[in-house]
Length: 44
Image 1 (cartoon, rainbow, N blue to C red):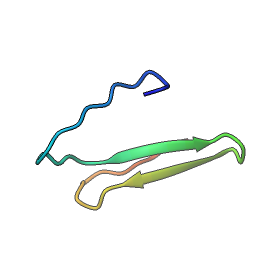
Image 2: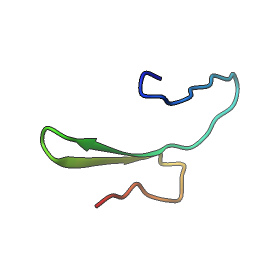
Image 3: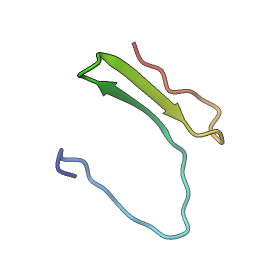
């Protein structure tokens, strides 16, 4: 939220998760995906 993202909360609803994070210090991308999803997290 400090970076301007709008966060919402809800009870009983579930979604999927796929994300990419840049580690600026080590200059490395980290990717993660939830096993229930049929996609992938990818970056270059």
